[in-house]
Image (cartoon, rainbow, N blue to C red; front, top):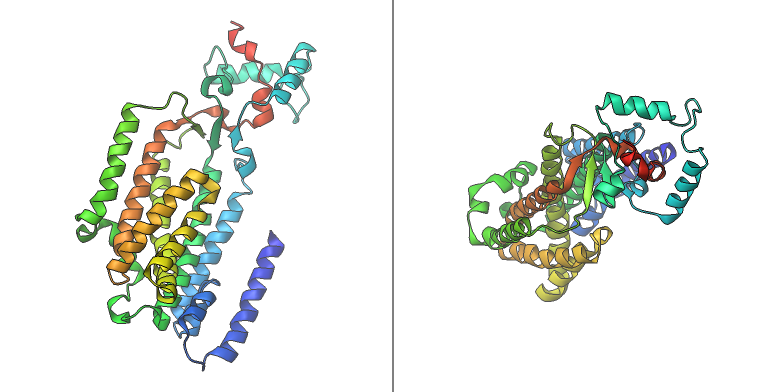
Length: 362
């Protein structure tokens, strides 16, 4: 990881030097400047906006570095270890160790002894200790470090996406420029401005989502996917901050990149139907990591947001408002299936090595 940052930094310095030498005097081509924006700040710097370019680069590197530092914390959970589910091989091993009196042996600094376990139960004021797989079924887990790393990583992506859009926009990609030269402040406050939230283009999708959320609330799933949180994350209000930040990052930066840049570029090059379809499909595929259902819903949302962008003469603020509040509602509803539990720190093997019979011991 450290070598990656060194290479990235060296590449940025070399690229800056070459571009300053060869491109300052050339004609401005918006698509090229959008490409330069993938190195945050470079497009702005080449356009002569050195202060803006330095701010974008500084923020990007700061967020990226802070996200990386979060992964070094002891409570950070790698992505491939966040899901806890039943595995028969682990259960068989745990049962064998338990029956042969090998499960809880006092190996200092290496394992938990039966006395450590009893002491923990006394400290937590519990008579029994329930295996979380019995209580929740398969579940996800999240700690402060895990959530913090995600928020900071998305903030770095936020800066990168905005860098691409702002470089494309300021290089003249969007015309007439005078009508669409929105500052970052203009985009950031769009979700809270009455003109963007008190109209039918906002309330048609948001009203549908609220109705769907209300139905789901009155007809909850029998076996929801629980997420266990580190104690304090929910009652302290941290998860509310998490939802707001994730939604803001997605609303502003994704609209800037997928609509402000891609949608405009594709429609300009291929026409309305094919261009809108292309940007929407790419937007959907960008959500592939969340499952095929999310790809389909994101693609449909991309069509709607792209249409608003086209209809409003390439102004992205209406779609930002809809996107932000859509995500806020979706994430807020999902908070119902989160619960603080000290078992969040136990990994897959540790959970399986909690004897199931132990909860009935008393």
